[in-house]
Length: 277
Length: 227
Image (cartoon, rainbow over all chains, first blue to last red; front, side, top):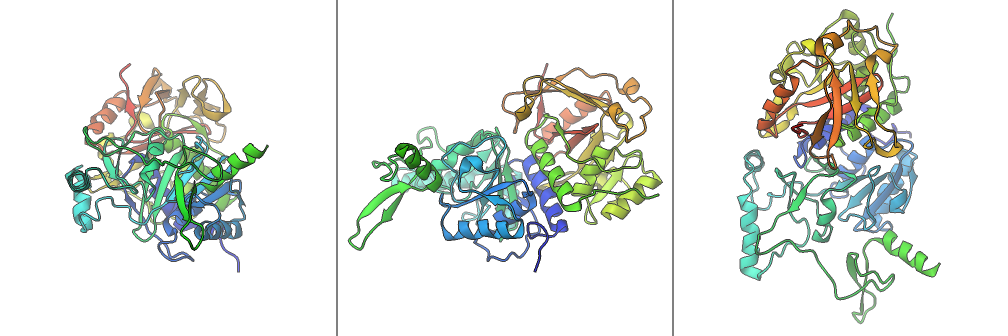
């Protein structure tokens, strides 16, 4: 059985491409699109896959990561999917990729202007847990009325003494639209601000696309007396010794022994290769 | 006789789209389009490349100069619907910018759906960009003029009506510091019209300018700085 290049038919790609251009033109605004059924279930990155399919050309080099890792099920499946339906080259090295599809991380290696980052997004609406009605959240965006989110962050402070949101931490894009950065750790939020690379977001089940253009001001919400802070660790990566990357805590045996390792496998692997050389 | 469209339907539109996406993501930076399909007058080949890449039976297009041959070409190759009035169009092709309708007339979207707004493809006489901000290929300042284009018949010298515009500085999302660009062949009050719409953000229209084989985009968020 053969497919059209990159699986989707050309009408669908054109629809996605028109929506992506509007998404870039209105930074942070969620553009509705006609999400298609994909050969993976919702929740496995169908939004990101459709965005990637609309972008992909034969000269692209694709990298796919899941929580920073190139070798986890979701990443391996999506990479193999596009190698099969588009015949594109794939890589695990951030610097070699022209297109990077990601679930829940931004690579540690700085991105370049000629790279595009595609995020898989489960819930594109940052206000959804606070206001379930779509008609209502759409009005709040129209009026730029984001008081609900500030109250939520304030309640965190009142209850816990600090803002307890640690991932999917809400951002204001270009001073206008409240936007979900997807469930990346707040550690990665500073990388959204004035990024040289274009960042595109796809939510397949919720049928929304949005974008953060390069060099766009992205502000993580905070208060004057409770400024935005990222996570930090008392540990270093036990494999590569990095003290500035995002660390995963991994249980390594039945006795509950733990170790901290970089979540970005390419970053960690490259550092270890360099150290050996 | 009917002219051909993209020789390689799938990959020509994919390559064109990637340039359009980067053009929209990096406003005021001209980019060369990879493929220029044959195009009947008054549609410039670069404008035709954009129409073939983005338009189909689900989009409506308003042609400023609805010539019979251009209409049948677009209907045959893209199957697109023609809009009777500028306000009904998803895309508008402006082939004679000096006499184009006011930007106010095109769809701006509504506050709940600002994406339901028009994209204009404007065939400029020429545009020239700033030195040193030309992106990865390291070219310096250059000028792109549509008169170099042998595939379209020469326009009746729109430069004599629009005049030569001085370079303007732009800022906004997608622009690192500022970007300098001059676009020739626009109506004299074009920038006043566009500035008047900025008060309605996030409503607005998004602009693609083409000249020869180049495209440059100005999304609604790009601000013209005082010189």
